Length: 307
Length: 154
Image (cartoon, rainbow over all chains, first blue to last red; front, side):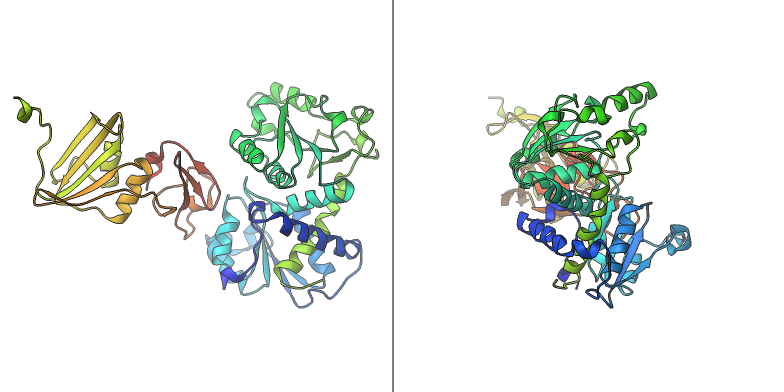
């Protein structure tokens, strides 16, 4: 039955205790995530249905399943599947449910994962639904913060496209559950929508806003950078100006807190200079790796296997 | 006395009087009921009438018709204080205020063009209804409709 499945659709579906449970499960699995293979999910098949390009999400799910001893089915390209024949997502989900034990879905339409959950007879994991949710990214971000900094009494600056960026909305929401002190840093045209800010405050977060990145650098535990997309700016000169103002280099890190960490969901383009990569503050590649233990944890949970 | 001459709308024998419609929403109520210029039904519409309860209101009277639940739910979305009076043989046979449902299905189109409910997928649009003020939250993409709800009615 569909309703018996534990789907992973949106961070809004999780309580703090449930998030903590997932993060603890990931801690247990991290050593295995770094190398080796187990039989924890032997005999289980994970279907990867990606209607949009993905490197990290798709490959880290695949790695997670293989490390747990399970197998992976890939949709392959859209062109090689029934999608080009006009098959609905609902039908595809119904069919793939009979071939697999869980499905990871990335789809360009918002709400696609929630709709898929209505038609699936196996758990659906949302791997990104358009500009909607990407809960596994948020969970790996939280895991990175927990491992490399601290979730309680956190001072975090979230920088870049806070209007359209799907990861930052979910992340800010989840951090609110932990009562974080959040500083939103963005150009005026990419500010976080008022409605979301209102929700965050109502949930217990302390939220402030600035357009000046340098103003916040020395007072945060985590600097979370995001990409500013060129297509958001009708005027290319305006884009170039903004991109320059929201880029960090090694020089910016001279007066920051000693244990401050820099995160980024990747791919980065201009927003973090390569001179930051070798600093003690850079954590974005480690963050990317943490996607594996988090996705391992989620797979064991949705497939009902204790670790 | 000129009372008789001041009567703007005649009483009806059988039908429905929708009273306390938010001022300016009468035409949207007609749209919800599928009443167009080519309908043969006898309809009376009063707009911007002064009222004791609210400053101004609209009233719609329809002869020989009682409303379906779905029509009443739709009216509640654009006029949460409207009252439905069922008239039989010139008397009020039933009177109730519309009730805002907690969830509406297949009544509203999501305003987010990229929502899965706006594709050819076999799903009905579903919205959670929030009150004071009325807001509709799409259960699929979570987009919130906060104004001009009438424009989004299916």
